[in-house]
Structures are given as C-alpha cells and as structure tokens.
Picture (cartoon, helix red, strand yellow):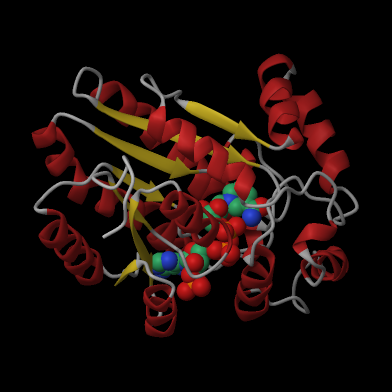
Length: 291
Ligand SMILES: NC(=O)c1ccc[n+]([C@@H]2O[C@H](COP(=O)([O-])OP(=O)(O)OC[C@H]3O[C@@H](n4cnc5c(N)ncnc54)[C@H](OP(=O)(O)O)[C@@H]3O)[C@@H](O)[C@H]2O)c1
C-alpha cells in the first residue's frame, strides 16, 4: 500500500492508455492518490497494471463495462470514491455535411453519453459520502468552434451545457464539478483523429476535397509541432487544483489559445469571432486544439 496523505482519496480516470489520461494518472499516483486507471483495450489495462496502477477495463461505449469497472473500484475502496476524471474521448475530423449521422452518433456515444452514464453511476456514491469531485476534460473547442471539427465541437459543447446544469444541481451537496479547457496538448489525439478521418470521411466525393488535403497534412504531423502546445503536465496542474481546492472553479483554462478564445468569445460579436476563428483554421494548417 502506498504511503501519503492522499491515499484514502480514490480517483477513477478514463482513457489512460495514452496522452492526458496517462499523464494525469501518473501525476496523481506520484502525489499519493489511489488511482484507478482505466482503459478499454486489455493490452493497455495489463500495461497499466504492470506500472503499478489499480487498472480496470472500461469502454465508454459499453454500459456493462462501465458498470463492472465501477463495481470493481467500489469493492476495492469499501464503497467510496473521491473523484472521477472523465477524460476518454476522440476527434472525428470532417465537414458537417460529410459526417454520416451514425458517425456523429458514435462520437457522442464515447465523448458524451459514456461520460454521462459513468457520472450518473458515481453520483449516488458521492452524494451518500457528502463529498466528491467530478472533473470533465472538455476543450477550448467546447468554447468556440472551428471548421472540420463539427462532431468534436458538438460533443464538447454538449458536455459544457450538461456540466453547467449539473454544477447548479449539485450546489450544496458537497460534490463539485469542474471543466478543464485545454488547448493543444501533446498526446495521441491527432493520430487517433487521423485514423477516424480516414475511416469515415469520403474525401474524393466531397466538395471539400481540396481543403481535406491540407487537413490531412496537418493531421499527419506530430502534435508537439504546433505553436502553444503544452505537455500533459499542464492539464495535470489544473486537475490537481480541481481536486484540492476547497472551492474548485467551474472552469480551468489551459494553454494560451484557450485564454485568448475564452476571452474573445465573450467580447466579440459572432461574425467577428467567426472571422478570427476562420483565420486560425483558414489554411487548415493551424490548430487551437488537437483534432
Ligand atoms: N490533446 C489535446 O490537444 C486536447 C485538447 C483539448 C482537450 N483534449 C481532451 O483530452 C482528452 C484526452 O485526449 P488526449 O489528448 O489525451 O488524446 P489521446 O492520447 O488520443 O487519448 C484519448 C484516450 O481516450 C480513450 N478512448 C477513446 N475511446 C474510448 C472509449 N470508447 N472508451 C474508453 N476510452 C476511450 C483512448 O483509448 P484508446 O487508446 O483505446 O483509443 C485514449 O486513452 C479528451 O477528452 C480530449 O477531448 C485534448
């Protein structure tokens, strides 16, 4: 058993096979938290277990796997859970008119409905305890929209709305919900987005095929090659604040693009904001977030 004052604080994290989830899992474990690191592939669960995590299999598209994962966690903790870090998600690049509705549905299944279902699973535990933290890894693309990110934008905007509602409904319960709003962070997000793009977008038959060539060039590059990109530790810092502040904030911004667009969306009329965002994605070669 690991020593440290946080050890009695169990934290369940989704999407720990790579990127932010993996980084936050390691960082919280190093701070003494009891980290339940989850992943959907058995090979990743085994690797996390080898690394010393209490590793559980959890697929956000699969209700039974979420139920079983939560049951395992609660059995091991004696029925308590300090925090849930909702993190596992993916990007599905492609113009709105090129997204098959079922492809959009799939994005919501993972990025939105899975998070809702898992959150509803842990809330009775936290309400009973009288304390708890739900931390939602949203995005600057939950605050503003960019071309070719409609599916991802929609899933994160939906998450923002649901979370704002939940925060008010949890008022006075001792359970706090916070949104983390990262801009570009080093991870496998772009590689995974590129795979989703190739699998689901019919480039040759799209009116956007010329733009897609530039989109593909961007997706094929390394995440860290973009300006303002930060390592996962920048998100970890904000997760720690959301876990340890007496009154956690509703939103934590991470990266310069988030601060910039978080400000601009409040002060600019929509058409001006569109123009600013078009200039960012106009050449399809810049990004303010990974996908
Ligand atoms: N990187 C950025 O620039 C950035 C910026 C803003 C917000 N975010 C957010 O950060 C979070 C983590 O992304 P990341 O950047 O760390 O990308 P990542 O390296 O691609 O990690 C995404 C994680 O989500 C998991 N996942 C995907 N589908 C899942 C499912 N059905 N069930 C359970 N887990 C699933 C992936 O598992 P598999 O390996 O099995 O696919 C992986 O562990 C996401 O919510 C993303 O929206 C990222």
